[in-house]
Image (cartoon, rainbow, N blue to C red):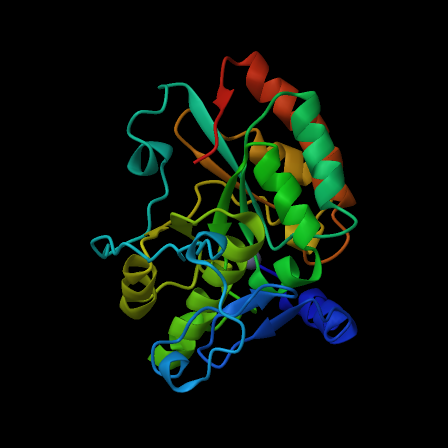
Length: 270
Ligand SMILES: [Zn+2]
């Protein structure tokens, strides 16, 4: 589950603070300074004012989504996602960031323990903190699409809104992080056939979780720890670095990561 209130508030405060992006007429997200992609519908009608020699125009082709078969249910075990994972694997997923305050702390903790995790990022937060997504990618963690605006009612939205939520986040993650997400997590685990079909159209596997310590509700680090320690081989753990004060999550992970490793479990990115 996720807590929409804090996110909405932060969004209300943060929206418009960054003008580093724009959306082109074709709907693709552009970094400031990037040349807009050629649009075959209009480019031939425009006069070419200063043609460059062919060798200077090095086009970076946008990766096209490679659809995968739609699933009827999300994957919630590591070996559903990565059949090749070692048998004693456990996966930590960290949702709702990037967060300026908490993502760097989580990254430092993971690095200290040599742990790879999966960050389910929100497109709108990537737009606010692009450098943090690049840090996540550079540290070798996996990145999953967690929609553009985190609507907890995603499954009930009309098909075109579901498409926009998934597509726009996909483009931000690709443009900013240089990585194409292969995994999608619905906000609050609100799945529907339409959500899974849209994720599949964009080449993504829907992922859920096994252990939800409800850290977003701040039940206290002790309770979060107790819940996470129920994790066993093959499980996917859910935690958050976005959506509000995550000090309890961080304090809990400081204890949980070494204890799970002591049990011979190996943290892997999905
Ligand atoms: Zn979420």
